[in-house]
Image 1: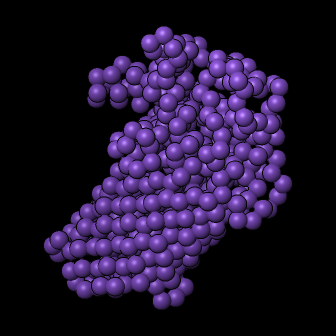
Image 2 (image 1 turned 180 degrees about the horizontal axis):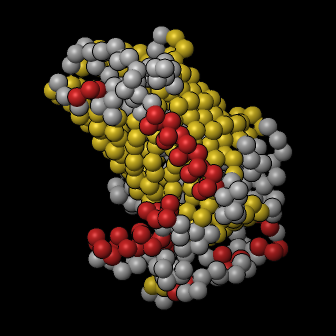
Image 3 (image 1 turned 90 degrees about the horizontal axis):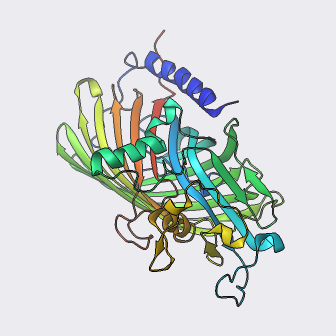
Amino acid sequence: MKFGRFFIGYALFFASRVLAQDEVCEPAPVKPLSHIQALDTAPAEPTRLFNMRLPFRTAQLPGKDQISVDFHSGNAWNPGVAVFYGTPGSDPTCPWPQYSSDPTQYKIYKADGVVRTGTLKYLRQIGNKLELNAALKMFGVAGGTNWADFLSSDRFIEGAHKGIFGMDDPFYRLKNKLNQVDFQFTGQTGKTLTLDDSKLYMGVAEVGATKFVDIIHNDKVLLTMIVSAAAGVPLHEFNPYVSGGGMVGTSSTVRVNPKSKVTAALAASGQSDQMIKARKDQYLFLDKNWRGGYRMMFAHQVDFKKGGAFSTAVSFQGITPTLSKDGKVIARMERIGIPNQFEHPEFWYAVENGGEGLNTGEQDSRDALKTGSEYLGLDFSYRPGTEGRSPTISVYVQEDWALFMASPGFGGSNNMQDWAAGVSVSMPVSCRPKR
């Protein structure tokens, strides 16, 4: 079953239920002040599709429960690297043994194309400022030629580079015809997982809980401490481990005037990706256990008549890598006997000062496996009716934008997910139309 047809069909059904709801429900109780909820969207990074990503909550549910659906289309452009786990040889021109001589010393990573992820999520209040959450994540891959992937396709990205910045195909995607599907992960067992664009893959099932503790709460200022814990069960054999972790953060909101407010939220996370081994590891690819990360959000909301609202948010998120730092990354895989996949390799591998150099694409593809990844997001959300009684529709874009982890520093690229766009719809469940 093709991922796009399945998920878009479900989204249309979900949207019909959203549009059929609301405005006939009783109004929600008026609260002195509430936080703006972050749009909790995870990047479609190829190495993290089979891992848990801790949920980011900045505000308590205004109603009893809520269901949401998220469709995310992200561009991946990592045309291929090898990670060597062993001792290099003495030959200075080629210190790496050929792949065919001992495949168990290598991991091979290729991720070129578009990753479509879908998330179904359910939230429910069960006590005094305590929420439970459950989520099911699935994904598929594509080449970027479908209309649903237009904003995350190579052609759109390079068109934006040219139209906005005056750069003509600066990363050589179009010259190398990289708007294709090429996702392969080969572990140290020698077994390869190849993602097929005709299949729907199951990612992770997640459950968790979040506790909110108000420190200051009045008509003008709201300051809340937020603590959450979650566990993720992998639904694909590529990852044999159950994950677990937690997040601690704060949300602060200030009422600017009777019709607008601003929220700032910050959280730190930590998780174990090898908490429990659920099945035999057939690949030996994902070998990083402990990972840390952060989430930040700055948002502004304007309230309308009849309870509606529109919000704009800037978000940041980062997390350490899924592969251990014990391996040596080799960007030019032909060094170890793996054929070059490019039609014009001169545009991918730079030569400087008579020796081999690295251009931006190769450097980013190599470093991302070692340094972790960070993203900048821009989110827009609209709620037509009363909070806790009306659906919320959101659209967003994400760009790889380093703050702390990448070596270039602020604004550097990690290229694990180069660019993404998505749409999210959420609605309360407990409020039903009157009959």
